[in-house]
Amino acid sequence: MTVKALHDGKDLFFLLQVDGDYAYAKGNNNKCPSVALMFPIGDHATYHNMGGCKEGTNSCTSKTCKGHEVDMMHFSIGNAIPGRLYGGNLIDNRDGNGGDRFGHLVDLYAWNPHCRYIDGIGPSGNDSSAQNNWKGAWWHTIFTDHSGFVEEDSPYGSDGQKGTYLFEFSRPLRTMDRLQQDAQFTISGSSKMAVAFWYPVDGNPWHGSGHFSINCDWIPVDISPGSSMLSPGGSGDVGGAIALLFSVVSLCISVFVGYRVARPKGIPFTPVGTTMENL
View: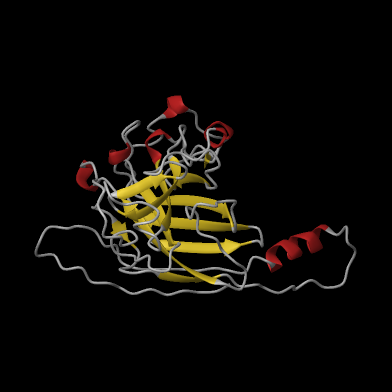
């Protein structure tokens, strides 16, 4: 998997590239690829056990699990048309939660795998101020129709064709969250992240704990301030405007690692390692 990230001073962007045969079953998320990003919020949030709170489903609350909060984005593409934008929308954000009734690109928070909730919904009740701050889309390189798909074109391609899945996501650096449900990013600051990928191996539906991961722990993310590379010129110059835009695109991480997935016993997992590159 290759993961790249950058920011423009306002929003944070992620690109995920995963080599894999095309697999798609309309309406069945577990027989389609799925991806998730995870970020620690609380000071004690661990990569393992999705925050690491030891409380159970009936006892985890914002008080008993304080400090173990993690922020998550999960995109299951079973109802998502390739090339279309999903995530935060007026209808779900009007209802005050992190859901996405159209493409299941949802904004979540968790304290452990058993205490995982959509933003604005949880054991303490609903909160009408929550929002889905994520937007994203997916694609596969076997697609030859670049004029745009509609729902009737599903499954959009033939299963088993070799190629690469592409996922693009964006989110504001800072959100209006007041309940410890969103990670907040600061220019010149640092954070951590993890990326998971589910795939229907041999056509079998995937299950929640059977995912690939880019690493066995958090990956560091530094939000660089960048610097201007503009030469003197008129304020109306298009080239100058483009240069200004790219001068603040300052963070770029490339992570090339082996997949990690629940495999049959006897097949060892050998991490390839990670490399990060700033552009």
